[in-house]
Length: 63
Image (cartoon, rainbow, N blue to C red; front, side, top):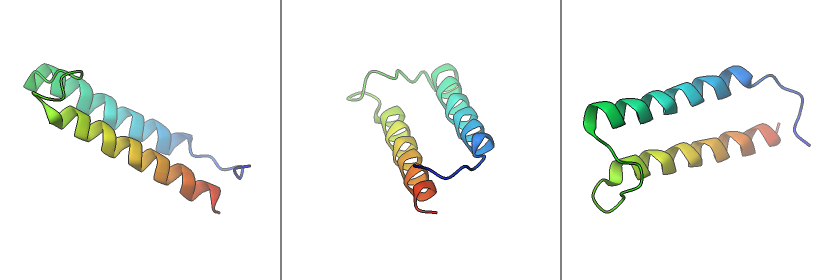
């Protein structure tokens, strides 16, 4: 079981950053989040965000 830590502020910050990137990329750059072959940048950002989330979760479990 994970230790009792308050990580809600970290999760909120990461969520806000991802949301800003998603909305900004869609509005400013015309990114389409379902078209990897034409625009791989949104997929790359999503993969990086997922890897970071897993790494943070695993890091919290080791304390």
